[in-house]
Amino acid sequence: MDMMQTVNTLASITPARPWGLDIPNYFWFTGSSAAAFIVSSFAHVFGMKKFKPIAGFSLLVAFVLLVAAPLNLIDDLRQPGRLINFFLYGWENFGTSPMKWGVLLLAAYPILILAEALVLYRPFLVRRLQEANSGLSRAFFKAMTLGRTDLSEEALHKDERLGFILGAVGIPLALCVHGYTGYILGVVHSSPLWHTPLMPILFLASAMVSGTGLLLVLLPVAQRFFTATGRIDGEVMTALARLLGWSIIIDLVVRFFWLTFAVAFNSAERYRLMDFFSHHFHEIVWVEYVLCLLIPMVIAFSRLGRKLPWQVAIGLVAAAGVWLFRWNTVIGGQTIGKTTAGLLSYHPHLFGAGSVGAVVANWLLFVALLCAVLLVFPWDEEMDRHYGKELES
Image (cartoon, rainbow, N blue to C red; front, side, top):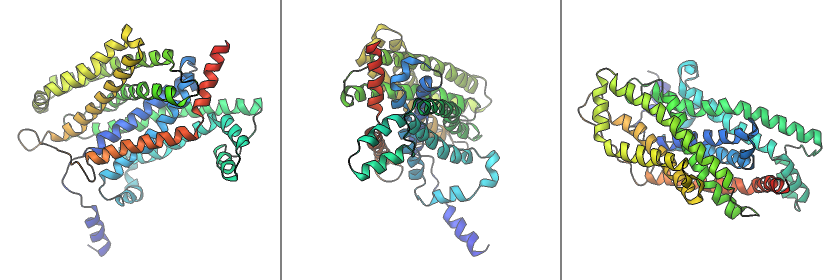
């Protein structure tokens, strides 16, 4: 073994530990991003008018979620320099490596979202450019418009067409960005909890629940406190609550197939799964399924689902339930030992890499980035324009 091989081997040694707290958090962020993008595309691609006022807001939320998400992966590496190896090596296995697919998807998806946001907000950014007083502001907003300052009908029509194309391209890209995370788990033969072709579909279905739930929490806060009218759109909130209800139904159906095939019709591994679900019975059944899925679903389709406090509550609970599902799947799947009796245990540290503190910091960064992006992009002006048109009509 020459010197370079020795150095490479020593640099590649990793501690014998499972995926930690960062990974379920990363999966939750990417999934919620995909769902927020889909909600945005309801208006931009499918022409659903009731989602138009929040289409830009959803797009920006999707962008920020996906910018913050990969930082969980860097933290999980323990040594950020290892990220370079990920880009430099292993491309010869691209065809059979879902993680390599993820590298390209994670690079392309946020760029596409940003491009779509710049195109759709271009008329507002041009007006801010025209109103800018300082040279720095003018340079900033000119860069945001990509040098296109034409506000003619033809130019605006071109923006709409570009927005439609980017949104249409972004839908499969969003599905792939989160689908590949489920694929990564599904191809792992060593974990009976993960090894199923349903895992990518399962991740996508639960992603719609978490993303819609997050919008139910963020949207009223943004509309109430950061728009000129301070008006919370009750119709959109009800539509999101109904979307949450239908997403939960789809999620439950996929989970039914997953669990019944894995536990009832599996081979000898079903006994390990039965041990796992027996050990976590109350946590999974009563908290994850009843409290975080069934009750929000019932409320979403009831009269309570039309009232703002309940809409926010079911959004928060459902989103938290999906985070718990990510935890039980990622961490729980690693606790099922293949060569040991019983279940392994994992207790995250409070501080340091891969700790509770790191995940909290990632959430705080998400909030800070969201505030910064909402400050730069004129999402509130777009909302007011839509609501102004409704009042005029």
